[in-house]
Image (cartoon, rainbow over all chains, first blue to last red):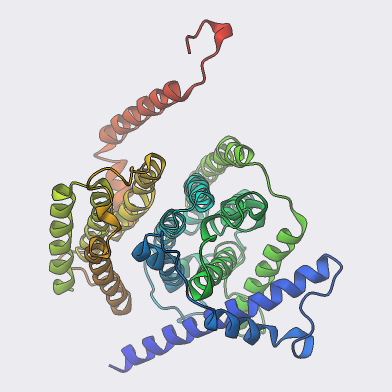
Length: 318
Length: 169
């Protein structure tokens, strides 16, 4: 009984930290974008503009929760919930420190891939239920883009699995005691980064919501808290991909002096900032370029990385 | 864990029956996704988490998205008789309820910790791999040939006609 209470407490604490982090990211991203684009960003509400977060939250919670009369209401309401559920469930398998994880699953990495492939439904059904041509186009783009990039996202991680000999994220971190996997799996890291950007629909790959051609893409009809859930879902996606890069390639909680949890968050935070920096500095590719880049460059590269890693592991006789 | 097993099995049968009896493609599709998720849950409870994860990744997460994609492209005509039916909330209550039960089961299983399989020992990714590339190697090779044939067929169908090489459009 005590174990269950402890476990529930850990799960609730992780949930709270994640939601707080994604709310804080609203402010952080806009400040960092301002810094890198030579402007101020939000700096009026409170010290350093920190009160912008509560202001935004009050706005988003009190806005009229409107659904267009022509929309497919039940799906329209369910779609934003799907992305929150799938992304939050993915965090269940991430080890934040030794013993601090919601579930110690032997197929942890596969569980993440399963949840990320289910999150496509949120975008697709949301865009489709809106009964709007822009959102339908956004949804079509999203389903095609996320399906294509999912293929080599999974393949890019198999090198890590081979080196660690396990799908369990805790074992993968433990296997990096001597050498972080970003060194032997550098190609895998690059491929996973690109796929991660595409999966979280961040700027170089934000074609599903490209605002200058599709207005806002799949969430054009959304407002109030339902839009807020897509918004928070995107930020949670960024945190998830950053946490995974930390866990899989940069030794997770491992590090000297500081406690493990601190190391985990420092590393994750660095990758979140990297996500924002890419948004501030990159352009959006054309849609056919996006798909041919995925299938003609990244997929062969991922397969090559897989074959070479497999050969090396076999030759080393591990 | 036994309760979870029987409940998911029941949900799988129920949603599969709904797939067959629905006249509307969208209804059937949603129930099919749920049926696959329920089967994945069954796999998980009998100690095959690897098969469960692959079921969700490949069937529910990739193939079904393609089905949804096609249905989005052919957008049923709202004036046609019966095709408006799936817009009613009642049509979504069933899938919604089943999905909620499955989510509850998943949360329960995660909280319990994996590895408490019903009766059998847990089969991990390693045993699956040894099985596939040991006694069942021939089957794997045959499946790969089949997939290659499908890939070449799809490429041929999707190819643009090239008049300079005498192709007819």
